[in-house]
Length: 164
Length: 216
Image (cartoon, rainbow over the protein chains, first blue to last red):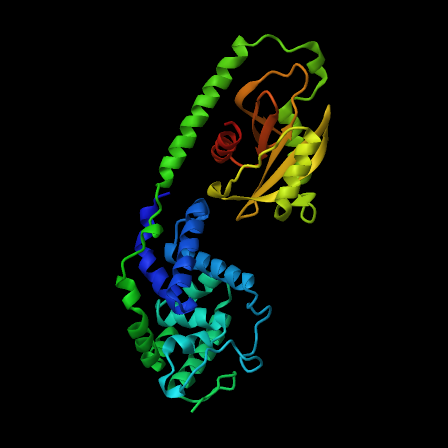
């Protein structure tokens, strides 16, 4: 295979991974694992959208990493049912966008970032994550709304505590 | 909500995300993300090795004396390997006796039964992971079978047996039986056969990696 085909996508994969994982080292490890897997599986790629294919590999690697850390929800979880692993926040007014993102369920975070940051169409997101378009849209609207509330300083019921 | 409606409704959110993360786009790419060796070089190396193997394999029969009569009744190694492949590789629930997660135990056990130290090749670079292995009966004693699987569920088996009395040392050879392709060779300690229902080029690539790892 020609690795040069993949290189142009590395900056976007890194940006997405950074927003998805939250820390630089963890994100670059995710990118590295994705690239290695892409090289190994390149013979399985059928000419088509290379970007969606690379993001789908990253999705699989990410899901496996979550499983390994045993924090992946087994079923789709209603965001009001559980307290997401929320980083300590000192004041909602200054909540960092990164921290706000990490309070979203991983499957919502993926959809929001692919649409908002990578500017993917719903069809591409559906292909990359292996989920139906209807699921893309419902996860997107829930994720968008939660993120908006967090950034606007409204307290969500998902376990975020405001410390004055 | 369509893509356009979403983009309008959440323009502020998109802008905030871009402000926060776009800097990553222009960060220098860590060196480790450029693969050290281009893959085509790997393929070229593997291909040349296979070519040498095939050439030697083709030349050898001319130099070799006729096999002893005792061997006439023994099913040839590639046929035995191909049949074992056809029996076990379609198994959904019990493809192997011992799972790859107990690899140390698996290798120790099969080495003990075959009476020689076995090596399990690592085929991750070729896209195959070890599933595990099992013990099989052969015409003259125990045989080991290791199974590998790729991302699409395609399986290869490596059949390892002690050579029979009088069975000749052979170089890298190719055989086909019942839709199964087999690359095999026999050294002084063991006979090896890698089988799969895959095209010859793919199998040759993997087989040359197995060969390189097993033959020092």
